[in-house]
Length: 269
Image (cartoon, rainbow, N blue to C red; front, side, top):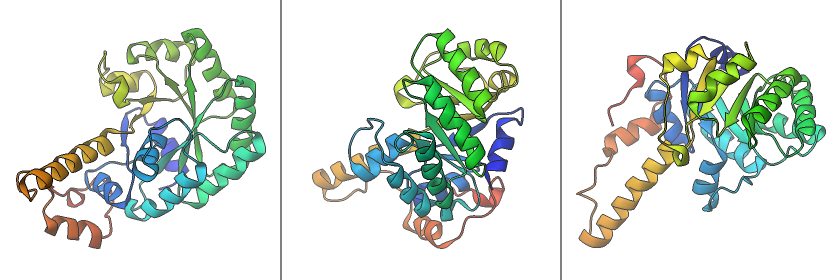
């Protein structure tokens, strides 16, 4: 799939859930679970490749390198990646986005900065210079009115969708009223768990096409690994820990991904 497929999801009138992936194995598992889009986040790269908490500084080169490794396991499922560093100006933005495109990334989530005008310039440059990558403008900080105004500016500049960070799902309808026709993306990050969650039908009614789950899988994997390591330290083996059978792991590694969404994609792990 391509950026065009990702753009189609944004305006499909239904919600597509995009879980976080971070290596070829997790990418293959996501495809086999039936997901039609996945997300490579800065926090996931920081945790699994750099071993540090996310500070919004995951280098674009690191994300592009990681994407190039896991894209072959996706079997054409579009990959959306965070874009935090390497987008200081319009020229830098285009250069970095082209590197993303070469690595197989279909769309990017571009953080806006303190200068909304500069962010709009970068978005306009990306929309014109790298049409092969779908562009989601991530807006964080400020009052609701300020967030709405920046979302409007970025949509006018050429963003394919907007992602208002920190806006409760219950308030997504307010943004829809202000920006009719602008596709939206919602991020369900682990540190913002809870609160009033809208149903997929409600989200779709407000123009939400994608819901991102950036850290759910990596946190689950790290929790499972922690339990296995503790069991080995305490008991000499990990027999008490629920694990994927080795035969399934061999199948996951050896078999190329099938088209997403079919029953044959799904493996009971």
